[in-house]
Image (tube, rainbow, N blue to C red):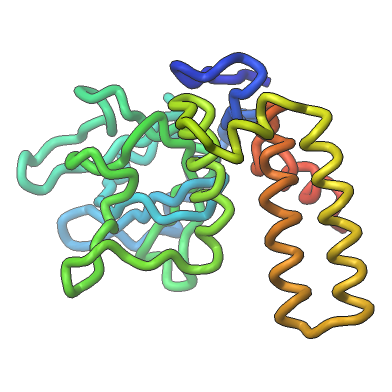
Length: 232
């Protein structure tokens, strides 16, 4: 399994993203199931395969899809420039292809990807960084763990004075003690307290467990891959 280091973060604190398997050998006949429009294009949503966050929306042609599969990196079709382009060909922020899916009507594609950097040309992590009012979106439930993981990486790299997270990262024994303590509090809350208190204690446990994982360089995605391997 390849691990991409994060600049400025000590080796033991690198919460590496994983790219543990190659792109499936898609039969080109699968493209027969795609309903390209009169211009030979179909919209493609790029979604972070690890966090589930939507990164961008672009268009693909049959040829750009073939190139994506062959190279393992997403290629799109630019309607303004009227040509195929490889995502990140100038910025280096490529989208490594993990899986392709298509919808029930065959007129839209979902690309599960591993981003090498910000997906948006503005430098934002995702192109969908604004609500309709123009404000930064409030995080929804599925974004919580990914946002927490980014915060932990930031604390490890920047090491702000007085940071509780940095204190934990510097003391592996303390992290272990806190995880055990929080797990016990979750059990006690489940036995004796309200559902709201259970959720609060569970959040504390998830935070401390995430710090422990970060201290070992184990990403949330790696844990989820283990769970997926156990399913069924």
